Every structure is written in structure tokens, then in C-alpha cells.
Image (cartoon, rainbow, N blue to C red; front, top):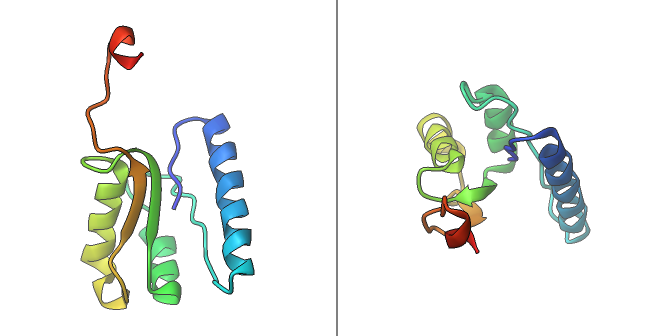
Length: 107
């Protein structure tokens, strides 16, 4: 599931997702990529359809795991589709550290 902030970011993330999908298909998996276009409300229909088909979820996001979009998305999936999951929801995100706001701290 892909959520992004700019059109440029969206294009890059979707290309990287379709490349990852091709790799997984070559390894005998059957992945799906969902572009989460709306964060409020989540497109639970498309998400639910995918969860019911695949029975597992990997959320990929560039922000940190705690308090990010992925955490809200994970909660929505658990609340609505718990019975369809065969494994814990996995999340691939950046390090769970505070984001620096000052340029000198960023460096």
C-alpha cells in the first residue's frame, strides 16, 4: 500500500512498487499494490478486497512507524478485516526516531 505526498513522489513510489511486484511474481508470489489515494477516509473497499484475496499486508511508508499513516492504516485493517488475516501486518518504514526540524540537526 503506497501513500505519498507529491506527484513526483507518487510516480517514483509506484514504479518502485511495480518493480518489487515483478520481483515477487518471479519468486512465485502473487502480490498486489494499492495506491492509497485518500487518507481520510481510507479506501477500505479496495483494501478489504485485497486483504480477502491475499490474507496478508505489508505497509511501506517513508515516515517513521510510530504515529505515521501506516499506524492508522494498520488499525483500520485490524478493526475491519482481522478475520481475513493469516499473518501479522508487516510495516516497512524509516527508523523510529524523531524527525529533526533544524537544518543543522538534519545534517
